[in-house]
Length: 333
Image (cartoon, rainbow, N blue to C red):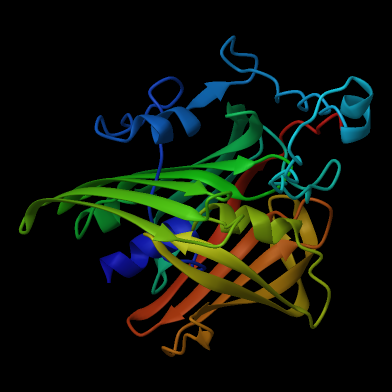
């Protein structure tokens, strides 16, 4: 039951939790593991925008002298091999887009009709990874005083999401719960199509464990938290399906979003038209069928705020409704 509740808190009944990421320079979370390879640590270091260490993208290499030019100079050279393909990043962000720095949504969670806690998700000021500007998302889940009598959750996640390409670079999870503490990190290298996943656990009954894996992944994936933001950027046309890759705990799978219908709902923003989405998962091409049903309601406007989430599972029904929202600052571009 509690693993289901935790999954709902963080992924809002959409995805299964996975790896994580942090940085000692800007995050309140734990630093990167000391034995992380130096190249990975340097490549995925997170810096504040405007930090002196942030360097602009390198200028194109100078054009090589052509054979004709070299013959004129009397120089005989071997044929120049064609240049290696240049890795390019997608540009998928609309302007200004629905995601604004400073936005904050607080959702009240209920389980089988009882108050279970709150989940707060916010967009912090942009950061930089390498030469890429990234969004900085942070989520916080806390159980209610009633739920604490049975099981306590005080968990935090962070995602660093490419500003133009809308894909994940890093994901970090820190759990502080009644029976366990956990610190997990996931680094996504879209160019090499590799995922580094590192997980440390300290369980009351099972003790301390640690695992590290490197696996093949598709380029430009979502993590299990950024997927919630990525869905808000999709066109979401009536009756259409949208499929995109998600990487979680070193495993790649697909999230399938179906636009089911539109509903009118009350919210802190007033009575709003909402888009109702059915969320499913597909692993190795096979749609997961475990009897659960998962739906999310987004405002049918240019911001796509979360209004409600519902998950029907074997052990009952979990739901979330928007309790408070801060709009954030509209980007200048």
